[in-house]
Length: 402
Ligand code: KDG
Ligand code: MG
Image (cartoon, rainbow, N blue to C red; front, side, top):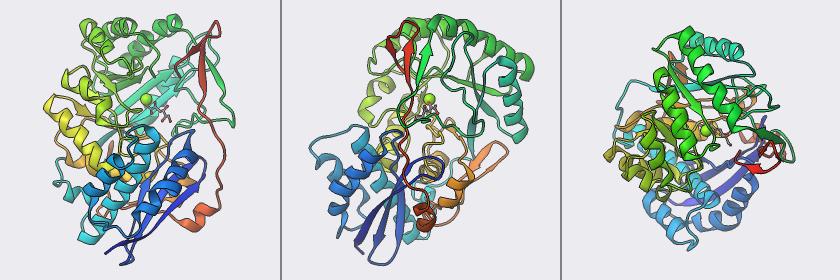
């Protein structure tokens, strides 16, 4: 069996998605997500112009060799565009392998390690009472874990607080919109938010919070120590992770669990964080970290160092990524939690899939392969729409991290 076609499909059923579809000489097809929010067309071009021609004629069964060929063979290693493109190829080949074997992919990864994949959703609101109502909605839906984010008094727009409640769609304009940030105001409101959530919902619910790279290590350590009494499940992305030594400083000041990695694209971005046990959860995901093959490698390294998984799963990661993530989540020994922000109805129609939510868990598809497809005719009805993520400035106008 040989690869006979590799096609890049760009579609925007409510938001932009890039998908790679590989077809073999036996007529078996596989798909992989290649969506990089706000930079979608760079990956589409990388695939179309530089990767697809290399795939034609290759044996689709040689997943590891193809991964190494695209990683080592490019000379220019790593980076989000390259690794997202490699991820799409890798994911599509795992899909094909599963279909050829007649097995869901998780069976090829060692089989089930748990009954279901525990997920968390986002409860957000301008005010704390609004957040509490959103938490209640998730609890009623059966969620066992909820991420909480609230507006910061005195600031117009805050990360994580959006109009959409069940979806997460920050790429909101054809040029980047601007948000304002004040660390001082933020540090005042978060402990109040945690206190209110624990007061209303008690301690059985897992509560998570995303700092979105906005603090310094010492600020993050201080916040973590103030939140310890509310037992956070994790504090996510407390600081930009380029300076990995900074995490030692956080650790010196708090035992609040730390989760990092949604912008990581290779094992080299987290090797020190994992090896020195500076984090508790690694959030790298299939689409941005080199596919199932490479993410498995990261998760295995993490398992050696008491680090659990907590993959990114915002709405901008397509159902093709979510399907693949669930096969890994159900199989690996050190699974922690999976983020699950739902997709719009239009997206679900373009990407028919077999995973399902029940009682706070997602369950991967039992169909051979990944159990997800793309309806190309429907996809063609939703042309690409330029959309950027916002940028973020301090109150004096200086650029800050979004
Ligand atoms: O594309 C960026 C989003 O996926 C990101 O802002 C979402 O931080 C995020 C999260 O934790 O879901
Ligand atoms: Mg995040």
